[in-house]
Length: 116
Image (cartoon, rainbow, N blue to C red; front, side, top):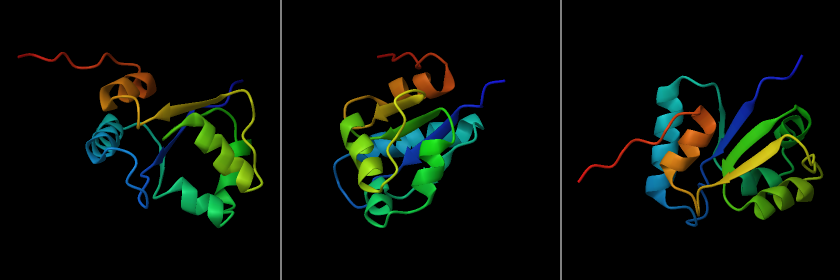
């Protein structure tokens, strides 16, 4: 029996590196979808505090992490003493991907068509 997919959304609250519109749109689409997900204010802060929730996330099976650059997310978990496993982890980058592309990946639906 496989474990259910988990979704972790990071709001990147303390760094202005992720476009605000992307963060808000991803969060809105996740909330409206009814899909269960965990939201944290800032993975950087959790890493600095070595928050135990990171160990639960790293060891709890497959997870899609919506945050920033995959290398940064992996480093944050390692810095907290809870490295991410090599399998079952996917990091979706709100700095480089659109909100619709992230939602499509998470929710398995096509991005809405843009009309002019």
